Image 1: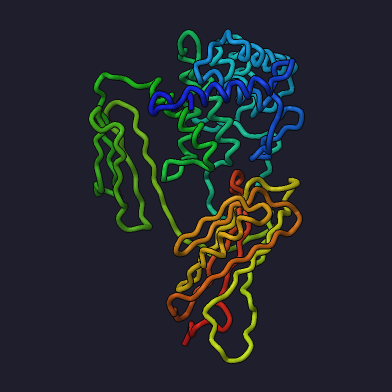
Image 2: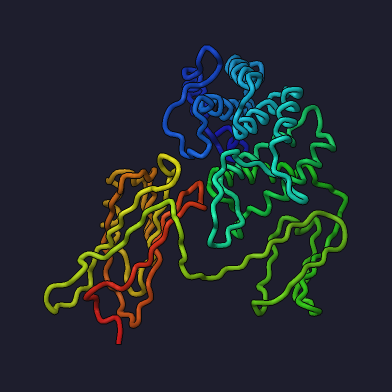
Length: 420
Protein backbone atom coordinates (compact mmCIF):
# COMPACT_ATOMS: atom_id res chain seq x y z
CA UNK A 1 0.00 0.00 0.00
CA UNK A 2 2.78 2.43 0.90
CA UNK A 3 4.49 1.99 -2.47
CA UNK A 4 1.16 2.18 -4.30
CA UNK A 5 0.31 5.57 -2.80
CA UNK A 6 2.29 7.29 -5.54
CA UNK A 7 -0.06 5.84 -8.16
CA UNK A 8 -3.48 5.25 -6.55
CA UNK A 9 -5.46 6.46 -3.55
CA UNK A 10 -4.83 4.41 -0.43
CA UNK A 11 -6.66 5.12 2.80
CA UNK A 12 -4.00 6.06 5.37
CA UNK A 13 -5.97 4.11 7.98
CA UNK A 14 -5.04 0.82 6.28
CA UNK A 15 -1.35 1.64 6.56
CA UNK A 16 -1.62 2.77 10.17
CA UNK A 17 -3.60 -0.35 11.13
CA UNK A 18 -0.88 -2.54 9.60
CA UNK A 19 1.81 -0.58 11.42
CA UNK A 20 -0.02 -0.99 14.73
CA UNK A 21 -0.37 -4.74 14.21
CA UNK A 22 3.31 -5.10 13.32
CA UNK A 23 4.22 -3.15 16.43
CA UNK A 24 2.22 -5.63 18.52
CA UNK A 25 4.23 -8.51 17.00
CA UNK A 26 7.64 -7.01 17.83
CA UNK A 27 9.53 -8.74 20.63
CA UNK A 28 11.79 -7.18 23.25
CA UNK A 29 14.90 -7.97 21.17
CA UNK A 30 13.46 -6.06 18.20
CA UNK A 31 12.67 -9.14 16.10
CA UNK A 32 9.15 -9.98 14.94
CA UNK A 33 7.15 -13.06 15.87
CA UNK A 34 6.46 -15.50 13.07
CA UNK A 35 2.80 -15.83 12.14
CA UNK A 36 1.43 -18.13 9.47
CA UNK A 37 3.17 -20.51 7.08
CA UNK A 38 6.40 -19.98 5.16
CA UNK A 39 5.40 -20.48 1.53
CA UNK A 40 8.84 -21.32 0.17
CA UNK A 41 10.49 -23.90 2.42
CA UNK A 42 13.66 -23.76 0.32
CA UNK A 43 14.60 -20.64 2.31
CA UNK A 44 13.59 -22.04 5.67
CA UNK A 45 16.53 -21.84 8.04
CA UNK A 46 15.34 -23.04 11.44
CA UNK A 47 16.23 -20.41 14.04
CA UNK A 48 16.93 -17.94 11.24
CA UNK A 49 13.26 -17.82 10.27
CA UNK A 50 12.71 -15.06 12.82
CA UNK A 51 15.65 -13.01 11.51
CA UNK A 52 14.55 -13.49 7.90
CA UNK A 53 11.01 -12.41 8.74
CA UNK A 54 12.36 -9.40 10.66
CA UNK A 55 14.46 -8.40 7.65
CA UNK A 56 11.36 -8.57 5.42
CA UNK A 57 9.39 -6.39 7.84
CA UNK A 58 12.23 -3.90 8.27
CA UNK A 59 12.53 -3.49 4.50
CA UNK A 60 8.77 -2.92 4.23
CA UNK A 61 8.88 -0.30 7.00
CA UNK A 62 11.80 1.57 5.43
CA UNK A 63 10.32 1.42 1.91
CA UNK A 64 7.12 2.90 3.32
CA UNK A 65 9.08 6.08 4.14
CA UNK A 66 8.80 5.50 7.88
CA UNK A 67 11.57 7.56 9.54
CA UNK A 68 14.71 5.63 10.44
CA UNK A 69 14.49 7.16 13.91
CA UNK A 70 11.04 5.62 14.51
CA UNK A 71 11.11 3.32 17.53
CA UNK A 72 9.82 0.27 15.60
CA UNK A 73 12.53 0.70 12.95
CA UNK A 74 15.31 1.23 15.49
CA UNK A 75 14.37 -1.90 17.42
CA UNK A 76 14.10 -3.90 14.17
CA UNK A 77 17.56 -2.73 13.09
CA UNK A 78 18.92 -3.78 16.49
CA UNK A 79 17.54 -7.28 15.83
CA UNK A 80 19.29 -7.42 12.44
CA UNK A 81 22.56 -6.00 13.79
CA UNK A 82 22.62 -8.60 16.55
CA UNK A 83 22.08 -11.41 14.04
CA UNK A 84 24.72 -10.05 11.65
CA UNK A 85 27.32 -9.75 14.41
CA UNK A 86 26.61 -13.29 15.58
CA UNK A 87 27.68 -14.59 12.17
CA UNK A 88 26.71 -17.90 10.53
CA UNK A 89 23.80 -16.27 8.71
CA UNK A 90 22.17 -18.04 5.76
CA UNK A 91 23.05 -16.43 2.43
CA UNK A 92 19.39 -15.62 1.72
CA UNK A 93 18.99 -13.87 5.07
CA UNK A 94 22.30 -12.08 4.57
CA UNK A 95 21.08 -10.63 1.25
CA UNK A 96 17.90 -9.34 2.90
CA UNK A 97 19.76 -7.81 5.84
CA UNK A 98 22.26 -6.11 3.51
CA UNK A 99 19.40 -4.39 1.67
CA UNK A 100 17.76 -3.40 4.96
CA UNK A 101 21.02 -1.78 6.12
CA UNK A 102 21.29 -0.01 2.77
CA UNK A 103 17.81 1.49 3.19
CA UNK A 104 18.70 2.49 6.76
CA UNK A 105 21.89 4.17 5.50
CA UNK A 106 24.07 1.96 7.69
CA UNK A 107 26.84 2.12 5.11
CA UNK A 108 29.53 0.35 7.10
CA UNK A 109 27.30 -2.61 7.89
CA UNK A 110 25.99 -2.74 4.30
CA UNK A 111 29.53 -2.88 2.96
CA UNK A 112 30.58 -5.57 5.45
CA UNK A 113 27.69 -7.82 4.42
CA UNK A 114 28.30 -7.22 0.70
CA UNK A 115 31.96 -8.17 1.17
CA UNK A 116 30.86 -11.35 2.94
CA UNK A 117 28.33 -12.11 0.20
CA UNK A 118 31.00 -11.62 -2.45
CA UNK A 119 32.93 -14.54 -0.95
CA UNK A 120 29.87 -16.77 -1.32
CA UNK A 121 28.99 -15.66 -4.85
CA UNK A 122 28.92 -17.99 -7.84
CA UNK A 123 31.09 -16.22 -10.40
CA UNK A 124 30.80 -17.28 -14.01
CA UNK A 125 32.31 -15.60 -17.05
CA UNK A 126 30.88 -12.08 -17.01
CA UNK A 127 28.14 -12.73 -14.43
CA UNK A 128 27.60 -13.17 -10.69
CA UNK A 129 24.77 -14.72 -8.70
CA UNK A 130 24.03 -16.45 -5.41
CA UNK A 131 22.57 -19.83 -4.58
CA UNK A 132 21.81 -21.86 -1.48
CA UNK A 133 24.87 -23.72 -0.14
CA UNK A 134 22.77 -26.87 0.27
CA UNK A 135 21.21 -26.58 -3.18
CA UNK A 136 20.15 -29.92 -4.59
CA UNK A 137 21.58 -30.57 -8.02
CA UNK A 138 18.88 -31.76 -10.40
CA UNK A 139 19.41 -33.43 -13.74
CA UNK A 140 17.11 -31.52 -16.05
CA UNK A 141 15.78 -33.68 -18.82
CA UNK A 142 14.19 -30.61 -20.39
CA UNK A 143 16.21 -27.53 -21.27
CA UNK A 144 15.70 -25.34 -18.19
CA UNK A 145 18.10 -22.40 -18.14
CA UNK A 146 16.21 -20.41 -15.50
CA UNK A 147 17.17 -20.62 -11.84
CA UNK A 148 14.84 -21.48 -8.93
CA UNK A 149 12.82 -18.73 -7.32
CA UNK A 150 14.92 -18.48 -4.14
CA UNK A 151 18.12 -17.86 -6.12
CA UNK A 152 16.56 -15.18 -8.30
CA UNK A 153 15.14 -13.50 -5.22
CA UNK A 154 18.32 -13.49 -3.14
CA UNK A 155 20.39 -12.30 -6.09
CA UNK A 156 17.89 -9.48 -6.66
CA UNK A 157 18.19 -8.38 -3.03
CA UNK A 158 21.98 -8.25 -3.35
CA UNK A 159 21.53 -6.10 -6.47
CA UNK A 160 19.21 -3.77 -4.55
CA UNK A 161 21.79 -3.53 -1.75
CA UNK A 162 24.49 -2.55 -4.26
CA UNK A 163 22.27 0.11 -5.84
CA UNK A 164 21.14 1.70 -2.57
CA UNK A 165 24.50 3.02 -1.41
CA UNK A 166 24.71 6.19 0.69
CA UNK A 167 25.36 9.04 0.08
CA UNK A 168 25.95 8.09 -3.58
CA UNK A 169 26.65 5.02 -5.70
CA UNK A 170 30.28 4.13 -6.24
CA UNK A 171 31.77 2.80 -9.46
CA UNK A 172 32.53 -0.41 -7.58
CA UNK A 173 28.83 -0.86 -6.79
CA UNK A 174 27.79 -0.15 -10.39
CA UNK A 175 30.41 -2.57 -11.73
CA UNK A 176 29.23 -5.31 -9.37
CA UNK A 177 25.61 -4.51 -10.25
CA UNK A 178 26.25 -4.90 -13.99
CA UNK A 179 27.56 -8.45 -13.46
CA UNK A 180 24.48 -9.33 -11.40
CA UNK A 181 22.14 -7.83 -14.00
CA UNK A 182 23.74 -9.95 -16.70
CA UNK A 183 22.85 -13.12 -14.79
CA UNK A 184 19.37 -11.93 -13.81
CA UNK A 185 18.44 -11.03 -17.37
CA UNK A 186 19.18 -14.61 -18.45
CA UNK A 187 16.59 -15.91 -15.98
CA UNK A 188 13.76 -13.79 -17.39
CA UNK A 189 11.18 -15.65 -19.44
CA UNK A 190 9.79 -14.39 -22.78
CA UNK A 191 6.77 -12.86 -21.02
CA UNK A 192 8.92 -10.72 -18.74
CA UNK A 193 8.50 -12.77 -15.56
CA UNK A 194 10.81 -15.09 -13.69
CA UNK A 195 10.14 -18.32 -11.78
CA UNK A 196 7.32 -17.18 -9.48
CA UNK A 197 5.32 -14.09 -8.56
CA UNK A 198 7.45 -13.41 -5.49
CA UNK A 199 10.85 -13.41 -7.19
CA UNK A 200 9.44 -11.57 -10.23
CA UNK A 201 8.37 -8.61 -8.08
CA UNK A 202 11.79 -8.29 -6.43
CA UNK A 203 13.76 -8.88 -9.64
CA UNK A 204 11.80 -6.27 -11.59
CA UNK A 205 12.25 -3.77 -8.76
CA UNK A 206 16.01 -4.37 -8.81
CA UNK A 207 16.29 -4.22 -12.60
CA UNK A 208 14.22 -1.03 -12.69
CA UNK A 209 16.51 0.57 -10.12
CA UNK A 210 19.54 -0.47 -12.18
CA UNK A 211 17.95 1.08 -15.28
CA UNK A 212 17.32 4.32 -13.41
CA UNK A 213 20.85 4.35 -11.97
CA UNK A 214 22.51 3.91 -15.37
CA UNK A 215 20.15 6.07 -17.44
CA UNK A 216 21.75 8.84 -19.48
CA UNK A 217 19.99 11.75 -21.19
CA UNK A 218 22.76 12.26 -23.71
CA UNK A 219 20.64 11.11 -26.65
CA UNK A 220 22.48 7.85 -27.31
CA UNK A 221 21.41 5.82 -30.34
CA UNK A 222 22.03 2.11 -30.87
CA UNK A 223 21.24 -0.23 -33.75
CA UNK A 224 20.75 -3.99 -33.47
CA UNK A 225 20.98 -5.99 -36.69
CA UNK A 226 19.69 -9.56 -36.91
CA UNK A 227 21.47 -11.65 -39.53
CA UNK A 228 20.95 -15.10 -40.96
CA UNK A 229 24.19 -16.14 -42.63
CA UNK A 230 24.81 -13.13 -44.87
CA UNK A 231 21.22 -11.91 -45.10
CA UNK A 232 19.82 -9.14 -42.92
CA UNK A 233 16.54 -10.33 -41.39
CA UNK A 234 15.73 -7.27 -39.27
CA UNK A 235 17.22 -4.06 -37.96
CA UNK A 236 16.15 -2.32 -34.75
CA UNK A 237 16.95 1.28 -33.88
CA UNK A 238 16.85 2.24 -30.21
CA UNK A 239 16.81 5.90 -29.16
CA UNK A 240 15.14 8.14 -26.59
CA UNK A 241 11.80 8.02 -28.42
CA UNK A 242 11.40 4.23 -28.25
CA UNK A 243 13.81 3.06 -25.54
CA UNK A 244 10.93 1.61 -23.48
CA UNK A 245 9.16 0.05 -26.46
CA UNK A 246 9.31 -3.71 -26.96
CA UNK A 247 10.38 -4.51 -30.52
CA UNK A 248 10.31 -8.06 -31.83
CA UNK A 249 10.30 -10.07 -35.02
CA UNK A 250 9.47 -13.69 -35.84
CA UNK A 251 12.46 -15.65 -37.08
CA UNK A 252 12.06 -17.12 -40.55
CA UNK A 253 12.88 -20.81 -41.02
CA UNK A 254 13.89 -22.76 -37.93
CA UNK A 255 16.30 -24.48 -37.49
CA UNK A 256 18.77 -21.90 -38.71
CA UNK A 257 21.84 -19.96 -37.69
CA UNK A 258 21.31 -16.39 -36.53
CA UNK A 259 23.49 -13.70 -35.08
CA UNK A 260 23.17 -10.12 -33.86
CA UNK A 261 25.40 -7.12 -34.41
CA UNK A 262 25.17 -4.06 -32.18
CA UNK A 263 26.44 -0.62 -33.16
CA UNK A 264 26.26 2.85 -31.66
CA UNK A 265 26.08 3.87 -28.00
CA UNK A 266 23.71 2.89 -25.23
CA UNK A 267 22.42 -0.18 -23.43
CA UNK A 268 20.05 -2.64 -25.14
CA UNK A 269 18.62 -5.98 -24.08
CA UNK A 270 18.02 -8.72 -26.65
CA UNK A 271 16.33 -12.05 -26.03
CA UNK A 272 15.62 -15.06 -28.23
CA UNK A 273 12.71 -17.38 -27.43
CA UNK A 274 12.35 -20.88 -28.89
CA UNK A 275 9.40 -23.17 -28.12
CA UNK A 276 9.20 -26.82 -29.01
CA UNK A 277 7.57 -30.07 -27.87
CA UNK A 278 9.41 -33.08 -26.51
CA UNK A 279 8.46 -36.61 -25.51
CA UNK A 280 8.10 -37.22 -21.78
CA UNK A 281 11.23 -38.98 -20.53
CA UNK A 282 11.28 -38.80 -16.76
CA UNK A 283 13.74 -40.57 -14.52
CA UNK A 284 13.70 -40.44 -10.72
CA UNK A 285 11.09 -37.78 -9.95
CA UNK A 286 10.44 -36.09 -6.58
CA UNK A 287 6.69 -36.50 -7.14
CA UNK A 288 4.65 -39.69 -7.41
CA UNK A 289 1.80 -39.03 -9.83
CA UNK A 290 -0.94 -41.41 -10.95
CA UNK A 291 -3.74 -40.49 -13.34
CA UNK A 292 -6.58 -42.64 -14.62
CA UNK A 293 -10.13 -42.38 -15.92
CA UNK A 294 -13.16 -43.49 -13.91
CA UNK A 295 -14.76 -45.84 -14.71
CA UNK A 296 -11.81 -47.83 -16.01
CA UNK A 297 -14.17 -50.18 -17.85
CA UNK A 298 -17.74 -49.81 -19.05
CA UNK A 299 -20.55 -52.28 -18.48
CA UNK A 300 -22.71 -53.07 -21.46
CA UNK A 301 -22.48 -51.58 -24.89
CA UNK A 302 -23.66 -48.08 -24.02
CA UNK A 303 -21.53 -45.19 -25.15
CA UNK A 304 -20.29 -42.92 -22.39
CA UNK A 305 -19.66 -39.22 -22.85
CA UNK A 306 -18.86 -38.27 -19.24
CA UNK A 307 -15.90 -39.47 -17.15
CA UNK A 308 -13.98 -38.59 -14.02
CA UNK A 309 -10.25 -37.94 -14.04
CA UNK A 310 -8.76 -39.35 -10.82
CA UNK A 311 -5.38 -38.06 -9.63
CA UNK A 312 -3.15 -39.44 -6.87
CA UNK A 313 -0.09 -37.41 -5.91
CA UNK A 314 2.56 -37.45 -3.17
CA UNK A 315 5.99 -35.92 -2.62
CA UNK A 316 8.99 -38.27 -2.62
CA UNK A 317 11.81 -35.72 -2.62
CA UNK A 318 14.43 -34.96 0.03
CA UNK A 319 12.38 -32.36 1.90
CA UNK A 320 9.53 -33.18 4.32
CA UNK A 321 7.06 -31.63 1.87
CA UNK A 322 6.98 -29.54 -1.27
CA UNK A 323 6.20 -25.85 -1.44
CA UNK A 324 2.97 -24.78 -3.07
CA UNK A 325 2.46 -27.20 -5.94
CA UNK A 326 0.42 -26.97 -9.12
CA UNK A 327 -1.26 -29.86 -10.91
CA UNK A 328 -1.78 -28.99 -14.57
CA UNK A 329 -4.20 -31.30 -16.40
CA UNK A 330 -4.40 -30.87 -20.15
CA UNK A 331 -7.66 -31.99 -21.72
CA UNK A 332 -7.82 -34.63 -24.42
CA UNK A 333 -8.97 -33.16 -27.71
CA UNK A 334 -12.75 -32.92 -27.81
CA UNK A 335 -13.20 -33.07 -24.02
CA UNK A 336 -14.01 -30.17 -21.71
CA UNK A 337 -13.99 -29.99 -17.88
CA UNK A 338 -17.24 -29.71 -15.93
CA UNK A 339 -16.58 -26.48 -14.03
CA UNK A 340 -18.83 -27.27 -11.07
CA UNK A 341 -16.91 -30.48 -10.34
CA UNK A 342 -13.59 -28.60 -10.40
CA UNK A 343 -14.90 -25.87 -8.11
CA UNK A 344 -15.93 -28.46 -5.52
CA UNK A 345 -12.25 -29.38 -5.11
CA UNK A 346 -11.60 -26.07 -3.35
CA UNK A 347 -13.21 -27.53 -0.25
CA UNK A 348 -10.77 -30.43 -0.13
CA UNK A 349 -7.57 -30.62 1.89
CA UNK A 350 -4.61 -28.57 0.57
CA UNK A 351 -6.52 -27.19 -2.45
CA UNK A 352 -6.25 -23.41 -2.23
CA UNK A 353 -7.46 -22.47 -5.70
CA UNK A 354 -8.60 -23.89 -9.04
CA UNK A 355 -8.55 -22.52 -12.57
CA UNK A 356 -10.46 -23.81 -15.58
CA UNK A 357 -9.95 -23.01 -19.24
CA UNK A 358 -11.12 -24.75 -22.38
CA UNK A 359 -8.24 -27.22 -22.46
CA UNK A 360 -6.54 -26.97 -19.05
CA UNK A 361 -7.44 -27.48 -15.40
CA UNK A 362 -5.06 -26.10 -12.75
CA UNK A 363 -5.13 -27.17 -9.10
CA UNK A 364 -3.13 -25.03 -6.65
CA UNK A 365 -2.09 -27.11 -3.62
CA UNK A 366 -0.72 -25.51 -0.44
CA UNK A 367 1.84 -28.30 -0.30
CA UNK A 368 2.30 -31.99 -1.13
CA UNK A 369 3.63 -34.34 1.55
CA UNK A 370 4.64 -38.01 1.48
CA UNK A 371 1.01 -38.90 2.23
CA UNK A 372 -0.89 -39.58 -0.98
CA UNK A 373 -3.52 -36.96 -1.80
CA UNK A 374 -6.39 -37.86 -4.13
CA UNK A 375 -8.50 -35.57 -6.29
CA UNK A 376 -10.99 -36.08 -9.09
CA UNK A 377 -13.18 -33.99 -11.36
CA UNK A 378 -15.53 -34.63 -14.27
CA UNK A 379 -14.97 -34.11 -17.98
CA UNK A 380 -17.40 -34.57 -20.83
CA UNK A 381 -17.00 -35.12 -24.53
CA UNK A 382 -17.97 -32.03 -26.48
CA UNK A 383 -16.73 -33.04 -29.94
CA UNK A 384 -15.94 -36.47 -31.33
CA UNK A 385 -12.26 -36.62 -32.32
CA UNK A 386 -10.68 -39.55 -34.09
CA UNK A 387 -7.24 -40.95 -33.26
CA UNK A 388 -6.89 -39.16 -29.95
CA UNK A 389 -3.37 -38.43 -28.75
CA UNK A 390 -2.52 -38.67 -25.04
CA UNK A 391 -2.68 -35.48 -22.96
CA UNK A 392 -0.03 -34.39 -20.45
CA UNK A 393 -0.76 -34.21 -16.72
CA UNK A 394 2.00 -32.52 -14.73
CA UNK A 395 2.68 -31.60 -11.11
CA UNK A 396 5.47 -29.22 -10.14
CA UNK A 397 6.75 -27.20 -7.21
CA UNK A 398 5.84 -23.55 -7.74
CA UNK A 399 9.10 -22.27 -6.22
CA UNK A 400 11.35 -25.14 -7.33
CA UNK A 401 10.20 -25.76 -10.89
CA UNK A 402 13.02 -28.25 -11.39
CA UNK A 403 11.02 -30.61 -9.16
CA UNK A 404 8.18 -32.07 -11.18
CA UNK A 405 6.39 -35.23 -12.20
CA UNK A 406 4.37 -36.04 -15.30
CA UNK A 407 2.08 -38.69 -16.71
CA UNK A 408 0.20 -39.10 -19.99
CA UNK A 409 -3.56 -39.49 -19.96
CA UNK A 410 -4.72 -41.76 -22.77
CA UNK A 411 -8.16 -41.99 -24.35
CA UNK A 412 -11.18 -42.70 -22.15
CA UNK A 413 -12.80 -46.14 -22.25
CA UNK A 414 -16.18 -46.38 -23.97
CA UNK A 415 -16.02 -42.74 -25.03
CA UNK A 416 -17.95 -41.64 -28.08
CA UNK A 417 -16.25 -43.19 -31.05
CA UNK A 418 -12.69 -41.84 -31.03
CA UNK A 419 -10.94 -43.95 -33.61
CA UNK A 420 -11.42 -45.80 -36.86
